[in-house]
Image (cartoon, one colour):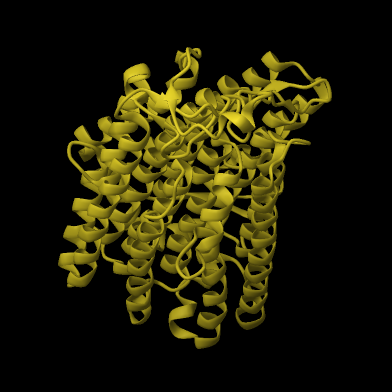
Length: 530
């Protein structure tokens, strides 16, 4: 692929978003425009993977300005892998949103496309200020998506979650921008190529870079700045929770990997801090899930815990560690989305994700139960799923690096993760077919229909308050989860099985990406146009 085409990863989604706003409320056109754009982007990213099979990088300066002045768009194997998986998850989550009625609003598809443009730009840019810009491009439509499905119908939890999400991200973006300003003030540039290795030799650049890494750690939800995610993510609709789980924190993780590799040149003096923080993230995240009572809250805490595993790869900063971390990152994006989508399908159809209000769903919904079971075992790290390969390779890399304490932490946390997955399985899918009388259409996971104003109308059962007094009853004869609603969870569960059985392919690609982080020469030369 020509390097001159890289900006199209940002330009095409933005142009399609504008076009969909112009055409107005035509749902078929919106669905085709959204899915067609994303499928094309994934196809182009696959071509990039094929181009980087032997390593290397390509770059393009916007508007043909010389490198060092132009905004640089750069791609290598790591970038290409992230473009494929983020694009794939956007397709799957949009599919779920359409099937659940959450995409009925006229602004849903345009906002998702603007979000995609921001994600792609953040993955492709090699300029720290423009990384800030593209993160903001990601966040602005996310604020709208967060509350879109419940417009005029939001619960107190949704309002509090949205307020926390917006406030936290505005604060974090400010911190990141301050760090970028410090870097420019100390180094005289924010170009990653010109900054290569400077933090390793210049303490002032290192301190400035730490401010940026701290901001990215907040966005990635690393302990001790992790609590916002568990409070905010379950407060929106299942489709948006799944979408954000695969995009926002993962772009921050990508930024940490890239920045530490290029700007800090993998400086080994500070790796022990990362190992400590990321092990704490594993432990505190998984323990936070123990007392939760809803499926999405449990999964949100486990998301925090798994981020510790992913970032441990960069804290090891060996070829084996980086390979395992990148593989873990890609695996986790798919598996976590699958779990949110399978439990989200239950919420949409049955109106609640609270443990104890539903049970025996597996008998009525065997397909969605199998999808959840596969993804849950993969998250816990059992064979033959991708989670086993991810954890096994990360354990081997930790042993090789002499981080035995981290190995013990990973094993213990994996056991608790499995117990938490069994908690959801036993509380929702297994047992007798019972459920509370909580109406299946109650927000936030209700079956929604578009209102005349373009929002989402939510049906309320007249006797809902009285019915909640009954702890359980036989599941009413509601329509079962259809193929369209179950499909996203089944599809992503199948991917994790495929990645487990055919792990050699993705491990090989992850190793190429890791080599590009260990030796950034090709990346830096591409950025500098040499």
